[in-house]
Image (cartoon, rainbow, N blue to C red; front, side):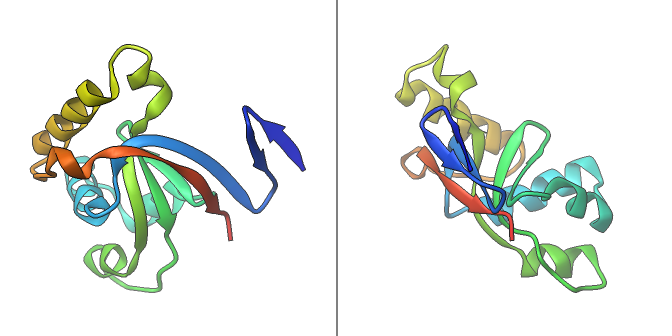
Length: 128
């Protein structure tokens, strides 16, 4: 077991701290996948530890699926959270400003997330 910046981590979990949302993760993920024209194998590559990143957006969840199409794969995924790494955005902005920035970034993807649904989110994601 190793200690990392106040978080305890072992081989079965990964710590995360993001400014993001919990209720819109699948919609944001779908928008990012469509924008980047990602394949099913691309999704598998993103989620090696329960936490993955695509186009600067961090996604937390369980990527396990057994489906034939990209739509089926996305629909069956269990995504808990999505957002932007907190350290980078909060070094330059207050949390209130960071929430507005994240809200606008999601809008650019075509996903309307109300600013009151964007928060500082942290925890551990299972690698299993």
